[in-house]
View 1 (cartoon, rainbow, N blue to C red):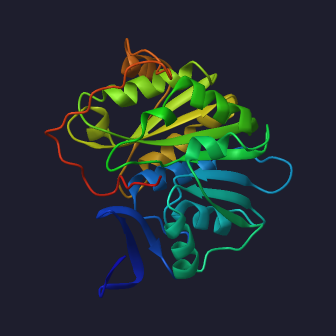
View 2: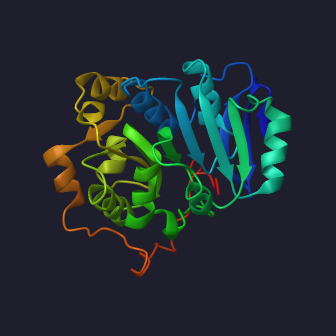
Length: 270
């Protein structure tokens, strides 16, 4: 864990030396990682459902998104999953996280834990799962996305953090994968990342509710973030995906570029 004398309430959680979560201990609504700000903007535009907001966080790390949602949605009920059982205990002690049933922490593998959840039991599933600087392939596939869709209630949303480098082959394939499962798909990222100028994070969005992404207010809010972001849907998304094919459990893994070093902020969560 790392702190700064210039920002005494803020801490950065390092996992295997990689920044995994940033938290303001005095302000749970502060999110410093740009991709988390983008996810939060999408969740702010999620049409309300009956009952409390329910979310599943896969690759929870320091639970920054769960803390944010607890503050933004009174009465929220959330589950946070991380592979490291020691980390699960430590973050509960270090960060004074909401207690069960507001926030239940589970140590386990993301896909296996997702498979234990009931149908239609979540308004949002957030995937922030990393091994080093890469998302494990088994949580990028069409079969995995189908299980996410099963857990979501009608109108719910899937948010996935995808860290990729030019030419964004993984992000394009993941967007194609979500398109095979969800009726409505979007990609959110900084313009420089979308243009393939540098390594960065892209947020993939899947839902069966057209209102989630067909919202001028969401695009405006994304452009108004401290680091402006774009939302690709429709024809722009189709052009981004191009000929990329959906990822399947039995398909060969996409090759990373071993010569490109990871950047901070991608964070291993599971």
